[in-house]
Image (cartoon, rainbow, N blue to C red; front, side, top):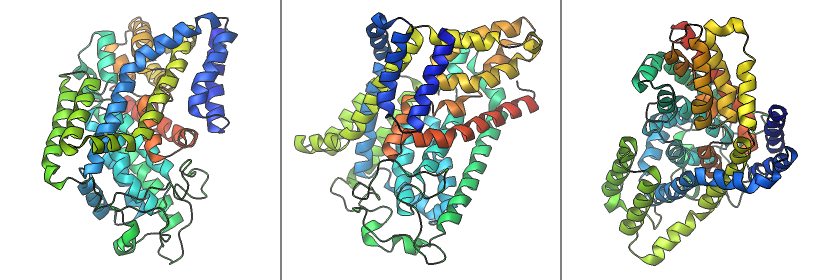
Length: 474
């Protein structure tokens, strides 16, 4: 019964948010609360929620101060050169813009933190997408998939968890998987190319001069969202709203109206601190280096980083308050979503639904598939890492799969490698806090992002699995 109710609860959540019948925050709270009562454990709801909140509180703190930190870095102009560099590469060509998004997300993902990746990628790319009236779900989808593949780096989380769960060396898991993961990343780039061609067909290609000719809506400039529409090669006004067009797979970019549309960053804004550019660059590099080295917990690093960045760049207390207030909307939205997700994960785990669901799937594997447990693990990792946290999957399910594989002569390291396959889809899971940073900063509805990305991310995971089998890694 718990197995059935678990699947029904997840399906109900996904259907309601994709049909936009409920907001993600409302669905994350109310649906699990209802199902907690249905399974007869309503009296324990408070315990489950408090446990879930306690588990995710460090993540919420990290996101809150990371948003403030990177918001300040955007304000002071740290990423303006990145925008200009991307602009030169993209040349106002939608195809190049989408490919540039994938490349940028992959490069920034080297720091091993999804939230950081999404904040930098969205900050750099949103002005281009909005100015060219491109679909913002294409941006969020491509960024999430590129980050998902790169999330398998040993310091990114999944590989370390797999190594800890099976008592293996992380390098023994990751290094042999590099060819398969490289194939997955190449597939993401190819997919970005295809989606970019579709956007180019819909919108046309602008010249660099056409895009930057309007001083009130330049790519590295600010506007109220009332500038003239971008023109394509035919000279006709480009179709589609700020966040997308009429394509069924490229829905509008969420609840962003014309008055709220953010076209870019004013090159003459009062918050710029050109004399402190190298200090801010050094501070950011030091912060990311310490994060990778794990010198301090990530929430502590971003807390200290935000305090230093505010104090040095804005000595005035009034200016510091203004900068915090300027980014408060993102902070509240993301932190609120994380704590709402804590209700979902708390109930799913506390009631035992997630354990019953996982064991049902594992028990459903035919005995004849025993020698092929690497393949089985790779396939199961795609849905399981979407519906479960990485901790739950790697510490709760992977050891069971490894034990089943060992009985048929399958080495635990093969199981560990196969368990990384689903990460491309995992990064868009409603249980991953970083995805709310991505859709929140891009002003994209979570349901639109989910509807667009799931099929492509699942296909990316299958490409990684297929490459792993082809190369004899899994």
